Amino acid sequence: MADRPRITACIITLNEEANIQECLESIKWVDEIVVIDSESTDRTVEICDRYGARVERRPFPGHIEQKNHAVRSATSPWVLCIDADERLSPALSTEIQRELETNGDTLDGYYMPRHTFYLGRWIDHGGWYPDYKLRLFKKEKGAWGGTNPHDRVVLEGETRVLRSDLLHFTYRDISHHVRTINSFTTIMAEERHRQGRRFGLPVLVLKPFFKFFKMYVWQKGFLDGLPGFVIAVSGAYYVFLADAKLWEIQRLGERAKS
Image (cartoon, rainbow, N blue to C red):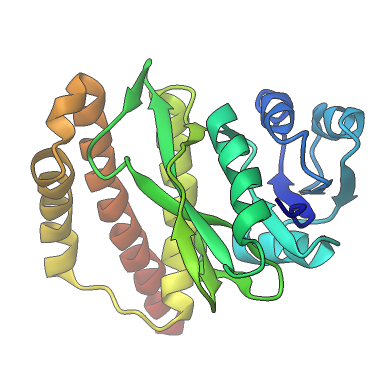
């Protein structure tokens, strides 16, 4: 069997001391770890240094921009992009290495199912699983795109789906979830405004209901018990808040012009 190509793990961080050690422990077998830190004030950088990561501290320009900077900083032909609150399962680590040994020359990227732990249980429905993510790819073939804060890898080439799970230890509790929704919807509303998107009242009124129905009924979130209900309500609140904030931005802007 051929030797596998070199892999660089790329992570962006901001005050992740509660998560980063377990993340790094799950990827310590890779050839290089690059961490782009957005000026953390906790022990994040200290922990990364202990794992031999190459850390660069720089202001946060946006999720897409920071992640692309991490990819550009990698010195390996393959990059594995992982968030600080994620871990490779042992099975996924083994599968990645075997895949690259056998197909690293012929394929360009790999999707992996992401499994999220939330409110004391693994979430299996509601659109949260299998949440396929393209996280392993040839550096020359892919880059981060999408719209902040919802980034995604854009890749030109041949891909394959891996079987083993990427483990996601997301929001610590409901309060953390709500704070993240508030932060992300502000970013999203500002991005939509910059792109020239206009607020529409029917969207504000109807979209949350469709979002809840999709997650809780169509995608069977009800099978995840009360956490599934919380997730569906939170999803509806997210889309409502993003459009409400877009209205707020445009309303204030129009008032300032008058």
